[in-house]
Image (cartoon, rainbow, N blue to C red):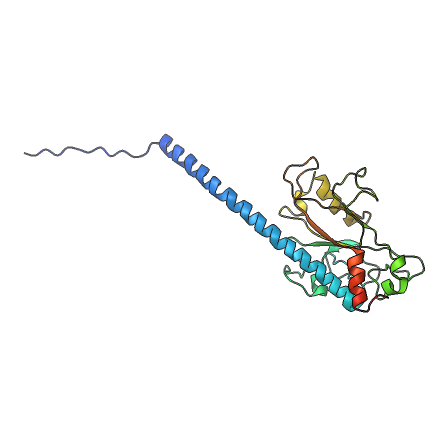
Length: 248
């Protein structure tokens, strides 16, 4: 009589399962980190293009209207505030995509970067002597009325945020007409304790005309920095408006 031998079937032990899970997790992490890095690089490039398009749209708007638009506010649904320009409701706010007619935007009509954060926009509110009582750069025809030699845009962009290092003579530009920037992946919520990012955001109180622009840094004495910043120099704007017959 043939005897059947019982075969003992063994499964994985809890220890073996734990080891497999740990190894799987390490492999998954090693795979996802490069993908995340590639995604961020793609988003940064996309945002760089968006900011450049925004700058060209602002210059084109000035050529057509004889002024730059005011920033949008949190309640203006992507339009400049006030409509028609003049003294802006806020010197720094959001890029007025509805006024400029540009994309991409969020559901409320504000221009956004690749992370779906609203793009920030600041414009000089300098008012030269002898002109109208409203700011030169956001009032229709006022740049032409005042004349190039009397215009004095006052936005400053620096490579560092400290008051000692960001002076009227040590900077990237001391007379920007407008500044446009993305708050990056972390947005405004990730800026607490990051001096360079906070320098860009504290102008919301309408008391600061200094901004910071440098390469993206994960580790820095002034904290992580992932803002992408561009600006309009007066010479680029004046030349464009001269060509359009909006400045004499």
